[in-house]
Length: 232
Image 1 (tube, one colour):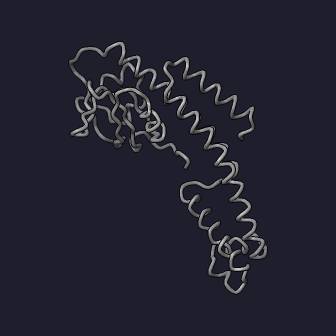
Image 2 (image 1 turned 45 degrees about the vertical axis):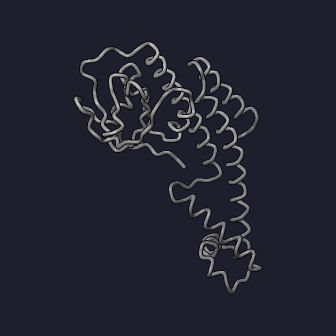
Image 3 (image 1 turned 90 degrees about the vertical axis):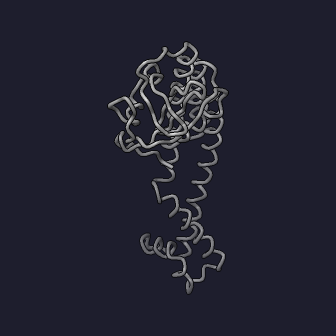
């Protein structure tokens, strides 16, 4: 699925916060990145909240947290029971460890998003559809398989409207249309399998990187493996 940029106030925001202090450690609009980070050993909570939600004791909204550096994020709390984000007005400064965790999580998010972007661009070379396009591609393939199973019975082709439509637009026979649909979907499945394997591997490595330096090195390893080993 392709992640589409939206104006900040409309975005949902994934918030990762320290369970004990309730301080917000990291924010991201990408749910996949946030869920990957939850596999780390940090004591964190996770929630998805509307970007337009006001922040208590502040003039900004939740989506504005996406623009703040880690040291400023720690000035906000998340209350799980009420679902409120609160700006700290008077409090002790964050600990060195909290700042270190926030910086590391932010670095991890950045590289997780970069990995996703590379994978998505590669997949778009074999599948140009967005949103409901994936569903249409799947339904068209299923109908093509069913039409092939019928023995390419031309009397039944209008029961498989996506195949019939494809043949009409391409000006080819229904049999050729079914075979072409199945062939192209097979290429897409192969590309998904290849890219998903390396995505899972590096999502796990980046999410558990112990330092920012290690995190950046892992991303460079991803680039090297992805391109030099012909995953694209």
